[in-house]
Image 1 (cartoon, helix red, strand yellow):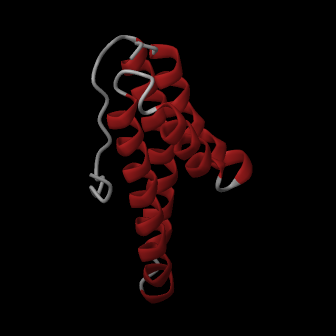
Image 2 (cartoon, rainbow, N blue to C red):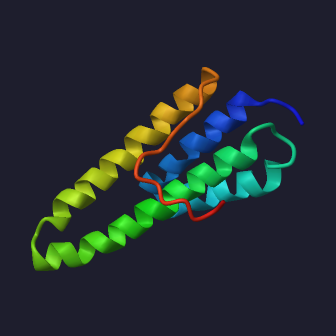
Image 3 (tube, one colour):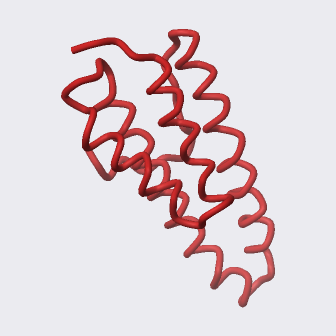
Length: 112
């Protein structure tokens, strides 16, 4: 196995493709994780972390829709999700590039 911080960093940043394509921020990290998890040191853990984060954001977005219709506060939840979806991949890409361990808040651990 080889150590490749740049690929790990790009995997975290690839989540931002959601802003452009809508679903690319889930598919691209999934493909990178599946193809590189046995070749790059730490890719398995980072890939699982990213996919759990993306799935969690999707679940939170689905939950916010009824909250918009019922109470109107779902809009604030969606704004918060959007901010978290942009900020944390960037922060964690910087952490990975510096050799630190990244973390995503409010992530449901689905893939173990």
